[in-house]
Image 1 (cartoon, protein in one colour):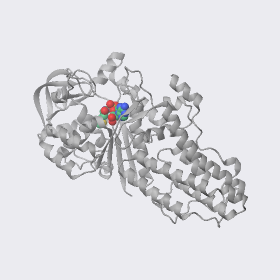
Image 2: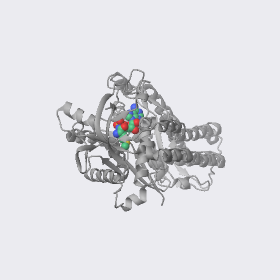
Image 3: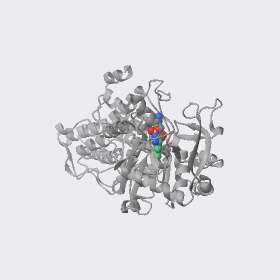
Length: 522
Ligand code: MSP
């Protein structure tokens, strides 16, 4: 069995989860579920980033200890992912003992081999980014371009990682591996950033930051965010400097790090330098997704438009997170920014999930009951053209996933659904029944239901609950590997009695406008 290891960014726990964090976790979960349908042994890592100044300051402002803040908010993240059916393999917290111990050893190893050195430094430090900024990258008003805050001048004696030593090798790797950074247009940005890259500060003085992992043998220094945070990807699966676990040997290198575009530099430059210094194989892909805005505005506490991931589900009284998952996962083309709006949410999920997909299954099953007492007969023939289209759709979807084009994959599925709806309209099984052309009528119904088996497999990563409801009514086993689904010879439907009238149920109820109104007035 081939393995597939994928990770999300680990979220800062100085606040609660919002829809932007949810976007990333849903995208990653959709990718994970897709690859598990391709028979791969999938390992999906997520977690929380719990050290640093921001957490220290937020905890102090709330009159609690940093650890109390971390415990409380890490739980909120876990609860949110549960509510969204984000089915990770492991949740790492950077305050986990095993992680802290290995981070200390990684740091020590890099000091011993001369990749980390101590140096006095003065620079523009942004506490939002938790890093020193290059003056050239500040806005015209001298602000951090991401946080629009004035960075502080900080002077300290810190440890530095010799990133410049790895600069050429990183550039070479990016140039030689065109799918290393996804989408490809971001690779140029990274190459530009690499041009004037400096060695990076990897520790802070304890007098400035106390909430962090101590540097071994130097109690005045704490290891500071990026080495600590980025190492989660290897410590979680059992990396140790002198003893790599079997799990690590099996899963590393990671197949994809799914992260936001704002932290691409840290992943495609800093992390790669650290991995090179550790002599470890490099990630296969780094997929930088875009950002989610709310009603086309940047989400921010000051605008008061921060949406919690579960509020949409609660406000619309949704029984499962599927509609929200579908909406989020399809909200942007690969690597582009997306947007959430209540109106668009309602319109899209009603149109795609209820009208196009759900109704198609519902009315086809109803006709099967009406004309054939719910039975699929041997003599009903599946239309080869539509079956071929479904098989092609499976391969298009696979290719899109391989390119991390998640919204594009969903679009292929809906195109197949639309073509199947058109096939029903064009062939009018109700007319065929009236004309007593029963074998033709049954063949149309069997064709549609056969395609709906493929659709339920394909939609499963996005909408696992809807897919289960569909497959139950189709008597179809959702765990059929995708390659088999794509086989044109494969008949998913069993011959014989498929369903009774009372077992036909809508797989997705239209989002009720009454609830939607409640949400927008919130
Ligand atoms: N802790 C670091 C990541 C360390 S990874 C070794 C961090 N945390 S974060 O909480 O600020 O962001 C976590 C992830 O959420 C990042 O990938 C970030 O891009 C993503 N998002 C945060 N806000 C977002 C949106 N509004 N939209 C989409 N994703 C966004 O960075």
